[in-house]
Length: 126
Image: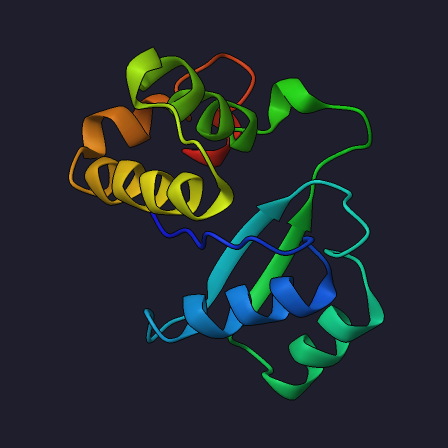
């Protein structure tokens, strides 16, 4: 599981930074399954892909299909898993707690696999 926590608006610049970071972790082509967010389809992202041929391939989900997007389960996980008393009180604390949470998840592959175990997202494992 690879992730990036950011505090600014998610836009094409943030997406390109994520692609740079993700590409540094692999020596083979990365396939990303994405929703239709405008940052994912932006000119900057297309330019990044053109400047880094063969490193990353984007696969887009159909519009209005959150049930096919395992990212919805990833985003819900910390909301339901963190105890109420550990809720962040400001943006910096929220970012730090989110990083800690997902660093723990990286060491729990059985939970990460569960994000993809639902009947609608098994397509990723096939």
